[in-house]
Length: 340
Image (cartoon, rainbow, N blue to C red; front, side, top):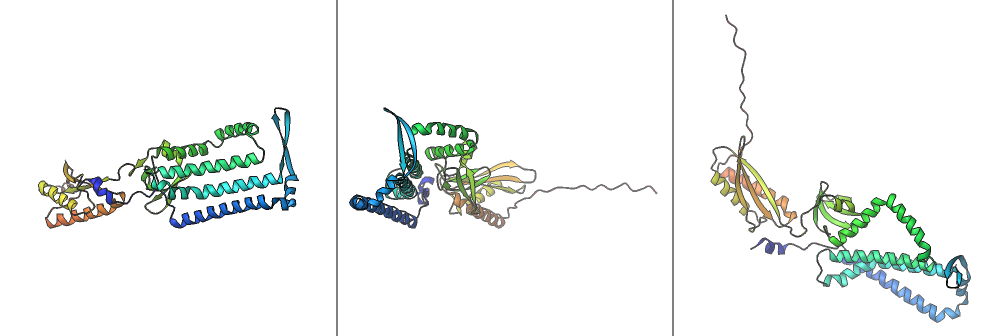
């Protein structure tokens, strides 16, 4: 049985951490929002003519703007009604951005043949697009067109380039992570001396939960510019190495057999690739051996190392194989005796 066939019994990487309770709450919020929008729209269309006081909102001018038209300057007035519509559109869009990606992933993306991490990338990009759409709609309701904002955006671009370049770099790096997928939710990674499982990928930073259950926040730029070790990107199989030093005079063939016997006694050690025992060097005080074995998951590494150490110690004791330690011979020289 090959290693990858044995690996099929391992649970697949959990790409999203949205449970059914959260998805149910998101669906309820979207349903309530849709019902409220439909109800208010129907009420406005059917009873708006009976409520003339509502037209007062259109007569309350908050401010005026000018724009260049075909007939010269055109004055646009922003009323209280437009302000209410602008905030309504913004709130609805933000609610959709918060709740729609989770439902999309549950109802559609989970049934598509997508690579691991793709559904998370799609839902995250959808959330970004909804937020940007809401902001553009909000500005359009307030009469702020692109022609009036381009100089402001250009100035903001210069400011971002100098003052917020790290934030922009982390945001762009986050998009690269979502598209290129060097790390995904559930991957085990090592970066900057930190090893753990990727639990969240956000706009500015990625959260790694280490083995002590501490959450380490790492800027997205670090994943793009620094060296990254992903233990489970394409294959979760890793190799475990056990170094053993035995005393000079030990039977080397017997030591190799006992090391392989210890590997065979562990249920976590894979048969393919098969474990190997090697006599590597004549050390200063020991004959140096190395047992190499493979496990199919990072979760099993520590347990497998413990099992192998225990099995090797028991087998060596039972077969009178001495696990040697550094020894040092000291020659003490005293002063010559004085002549009588």
